[in-house]
Image 1: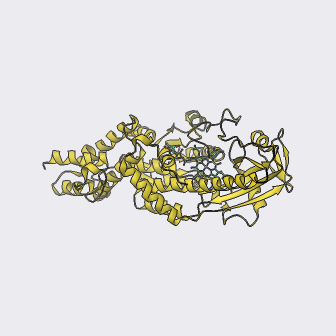
Image 2: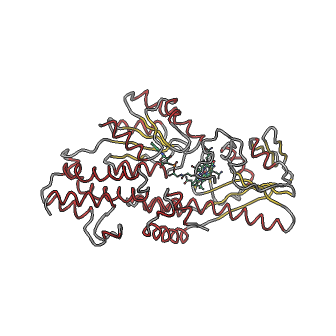
Length: 219
Length: 224
Ligand code: B12
């Protein structure tokens, strides 16, 4: 699940120029992080969403998401919507901080990256799992999108968390709508017979001016 | 080793990130004395702390910065070099408090209110510290008051603001305004993936850098 390649990319090291020492350190810290992490995720499926791709909004159980046009368009043909919350848990973050405190910046940096990879891996796991299970019923899934992506305001995390109720993996939101523990991801996945998983998001996003467009990679 | 040889060896240890004798990195220096032992030896041998700082440590970090700019080394090697530098600095601490040697200046850094992303900020803090600055890291979710308080405690410090979200980069503007209103002479540099040079100018900050080395160059230009 955790790829050395990704970690090197996030460290800014071209994979053909990674020193054996660094590779060894990454492997060791990956094993250590995996032994302390507590990955967890929840997912709830809501039927019959109302989606207006022109206005860029979606309503579920009378709660409205300001998805923005691009995300709304991607969700448009969904007959149901899965909301998910996933986390790597607090302990990898704590491990990273403890390295930083000891002045071991490189170790702290690598563990932080691994924590992000685990959080993203949890979201990926849910996405793939859903895709596989639903395929048996001839249903397909869309890309996954998170509040904060592609012009979808991050404060819609509040709506998402309201709808998920107690199924929040113990994650809390700050007033600025960020999740604690930090290494967490939330989002939506559309489900239907006539939807597509278009893969890489920048390719289909119309936010031409986006500062993150094609920068490094999209999560 | 005579004084010059010793300083040269120390420079090499910092440049290549040899922290101490036990450190396994870099493999080609295995078993040799590192920045820790050599700094102690240099002081014992009577080399002036200012000479150690200027002729070995700072020079080494300049070489590191140069190699990074030329893409000969990458962030991990910079971080190991910064660690070797900081290990050596520990031995010079008493001379800093006595005023015999000085750091280049003070740098206050924090991730702005509402934002929790700190890895970029941490990297900048570590590398600026490694370049010979005293760094005061205020952490994440830092508002105007906390910055202002810290400036009050650290006269003349340069301030760095970090933000990773388009929703929190706007908070930079009010923080810059509040700081400039209270301490007009304070120099401010901003960074983080969503911000850029023109945003920096727009909100009245004094500088922008896209990476830690850029932050070091900006800071050094202020004391040059
Ligand atoms: C890793 C990552 C995560 C990780 C970890 C985040 C963390 N805080 O640890 C995980 C997977 C957990 C995550 C989750 C989320 N993320 Co995120 N994440 C990223 C990603 C891919 C990289 C950020 C990073 O760590 N970069 C590496 C560091 C080293 O780089 P850096 O921070 O830019 O810092 C460098 C420079 O900018 C500069 N610098 C930085 N500060 C300063 C300061 C000064 C003074 C100077 C001079 C220079 C400087 O120097 C640094 C070193 O070179 C970015 C996308 C991107 N490409 O940037 C999205 C991104 C920031 N995330 C985003 C979002 C929306 C989220 C979520 C809200 C999504 C969701 N709903 O689940 C959650 C929020 C989590 C939470 N707790 O609430 C969006 C933000 C969009 C926006 N509107 O602003 C981005 C841009 C992704 C996207 N495609 O849209 N995320």
